Length: 126
Length: 126
DNA sequence: TGCATTTCACTACATTTGTCGTGAAATGGC
DNA sequence: GCCATTTCACGACAAATGTAGTGAAATGCA
Image 1 (cartoon, each protein chain N blue to C red):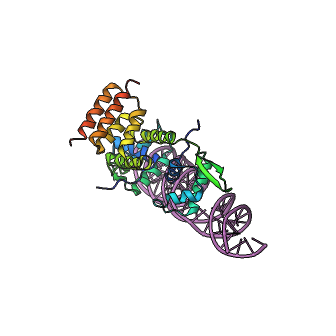
Image 2: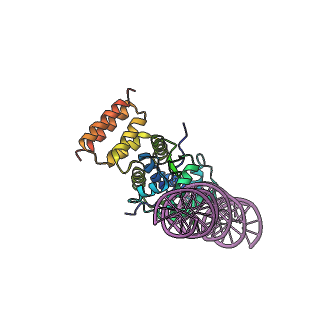
Image 3: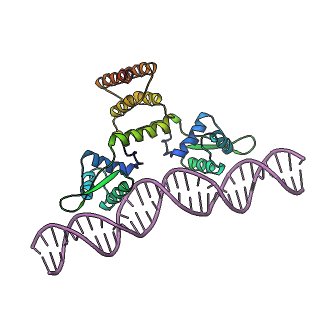
C-alpha cells in the first residue's frame, strides 16, 4: 500500500475532485473546481503535476490521446494520515481530548448523537 | 478578542511551551523544548519573533532587564481555529463525519467512552 | 492542408516555513 | 573597569506552496 504522501491545502481540492470521480483530464478538473476555486487552468496543471510527482496521482491516456489523471492513493488513507498528524500537532496525539473538543463545539442533531454513541460502543468490543 | 493568527507547526511547539507556563525568556523556552525539539537557540528566537509579529505572543521586561515572552492569544481559541480549518479542509466542514472517523479509528477505554457519551448528550440540551 | 484551439512541459516569482549564523550590544563577575 | 557570556536584531538560504505565464507541439475542423 502506498504511504499517503503529504498533500497541501490547494492540492487537496484537486484530489477531492478526482476522488469524487475519475479519471479526468486537466481541463475537466479545472471545470469541476471552477465554482469553488477560480483557478487558471495552468494552476491546476501545476498542482496536478506536483501530485503526480508526489505519487498521489497516476496518469493514463484516454481515447482521444490526451492525458487523464486519477488517484493513486485512497482517500481514506489520506484522511487517516492527515487526521493523525492533526491530532498529533494539536492534541498531543491523544484521541480523547480531540473527541471532547469536537463533541463540545459541534451542534449535532439527536439522530447524529445517537449514531455516534453507537459507534463509540462498537469501538470497544472490536 | 484577538483573532487567532495562523500558527505553523514549529511555531505551535513554542506556543505550547508558553501556554504551559509563562512568561519565559528565549533561553528558557529553548531549554523547555530541548528534550523534544533539539533546536539551536537562534531558531527558537526566530520563531519567537515571528510569533510576536503575528500577534500570537507579547513581550515584557523581566526584573533583570531581559525580555520575556507570553501568549497573546488563548490556547483554546487557537485550538478552535486550527480544528475548524482542519474540519473544513478534510471533512468539508461537517462535524459528524469527523467524529465518526475518530470514533472508529481510536482505541478508547470504557471509561473514556462513557465520558464521551455523556458529553454528546450534553451537547444536545444546551 | 493550414489555422485556431488545446494540451503540456518549463519557467517564474512572491510567500511561508524551517533552520540557523553573524556581529553588535548589554550584563555579570572578578 | 575589563573580559567572557548572553541577548538580540538582522540577514541568509533552501524547500514547499500558491498562482500563474510562455512557447512549442499536437489536434480538430473548415
